[in-house]
Length: 546
Image (spheres, helix red, strand yellow):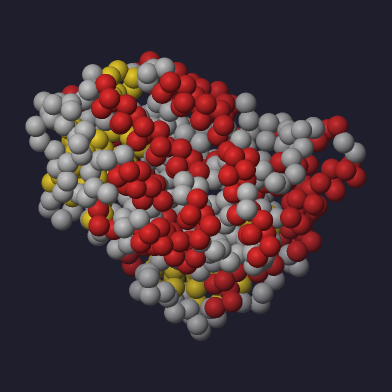
């Protein structure tokens, strides 16, 4: 394996006269770790910069109570190494944050990745030097690194956001964001706790918080459709079975629209073509099975609003059955299209609102006016508490990229380039920024898939591209504006054929004030992979190579 001080044998075939490493990678989550490993195997020198103290990315930062993956453990894992697949033992159907972080650390140990990672170091600026066709990276420790290639592996859900509420700095108790939960944990016993936000993080945290604290007040703006996870210990027989046919299992998942769930029953008929009895039977089976593929019960629930209404009504009825207080149930009942926001899976979320120590405040009807030294004030009432938790989500897909001062050709900054919304070619590259790649960026399937599988596909495409450039003796690769335009049109056209753009979601950036509304992820993993392969097979069509 190479290390950060070495030069690859191919590293200077393009005529560069100064380069500290071949590739700089930002982020040491699952994307950054595999990017490092894959490039090493290809003979390249790499330096990874990571703001945290260890690997793990999303699973390093999101330590909040109840944090858990919504993709099954046997699927949410690397597929690139058969021995790794066989050696690691998962304990639950859906892995918890501590278990996933332990897995990430195991991978880092197994492949000696930390030796090429600079921890507690943020990338602050990245500037493309046209005279040497190289990137100059400035970091928070005052260092500068020159590289041929620059890869943003910063994750889709890693830049936390806070609501614009007056007085946040005035609260004298403990303030925490779920995405930056302290390593040492938070003592909640006998504490009055408030949580703002009922997205995925809030839905996971609320049942656990309610068991730990004295009082929990939940401030909800938009109620969620959430499906039971039905999490349980992972049976040994199930794990042995999948491991005995892991390649076949993986290949079947790769062919699925979300790169997961190949063994979940799928139906290709319309909800309008079955009886009411059959409709209810399928939804009930999906509800009892649990998991995010509830919507696969029919082929038109995400494309036909009249079909979608049946799924809405089913979940609404479940909420009314579970929540004992009709007024609380009404507040928890969504009115929007089911599935246009990320479908959440939960453990005892709705039942938690039956607990005597839990109070729900609907801020859509009684908005928060300010945060005070002792709590917060809504339009109608003052609340006091000891701990304030923000489960207010992330600046998804673009936030971590835009927080770095990246300057490409002719002084163009990424902030200027994306001022009207993110635009990419293949979700991987941006015109005006040669030799820069983004893993699971806007315009790729990313958050609509099993993220680790999408990450692997991106990493392998990027590393193969770099090797191809060296076989050609080329120094730069840059997406063409026309290819970017066509790709953005393609992403939008795919989304518009569905109900996904039908509500304000973080897929559109609607959770971030002032952010341009653009549907960012691409629907459909297999078609995306075919297109990426086609581009490579046609000598990287849509790019200018020099």
